[in-house]
Image: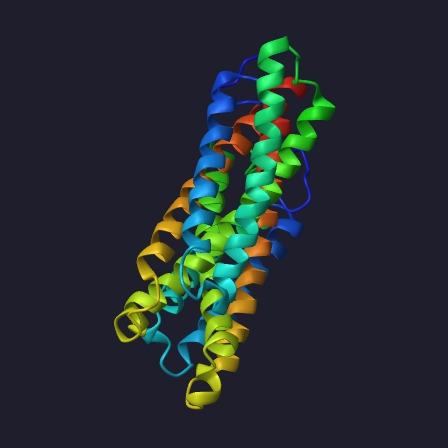
Length: 156
Length: 156
């Protein structure tokens, strides 16, 4: 079994998945508990994307734990393709959600001063949620990159 | 010379670069001619990113035309790495700019109804600019993908 740091079925891979799960959970919790987030399309999209990310990471954590316990080899090419496609699609979606929410959060905070004018808006929670979503994206990108690298090195 | 559709120094690659250049130019023109875009951080970032994209695409158009005229082979591994890194960095930046601007444009148009309340805002131009930037991104992603594919197939 070829080892690339962070690929499926390794301790590094499991750590990346757990980090994604925790960041997505934190981002979703911060967004869900903030006042009036559902008035902003970008924040709704972020919440939807973080839910997808949670489900995907949770399934892969279960598979990784099972694979580490039973020494089940996840590194067949057909299996890796599924990981790569899923990771890339989700990573693109998460990046789009994180960027658009960052744009909206900066707009509310700086450009139109809504945070000062309407103090009941939970601007600090929006910020925490956006930062955690960006962190979830970076862990996702690391997973996607290392799985893709493994796929390329296996097909050589 | 190995041929991958859309890679540097081919007709397809030149067509992709010209498309990027035209879309970035259109996006920048629509944004630059719209009223009050500089009040919104996301739109300023989009304008900055489209300027970078214009310069990058213009340089690569010149190199591609020269390479097609003189049959200069651009497909050395060292050269391709520069293309891939530049393309990926710019593609990520363009995607972030396009998504954040989309978030802000949707917010202005739908969520807070600024477009109806302040009719002097050029909302339709913001929309055109954002759509063209997303198109520029998709052409950029095609270029980055095909160059990366060529790099992988060359190193095998």
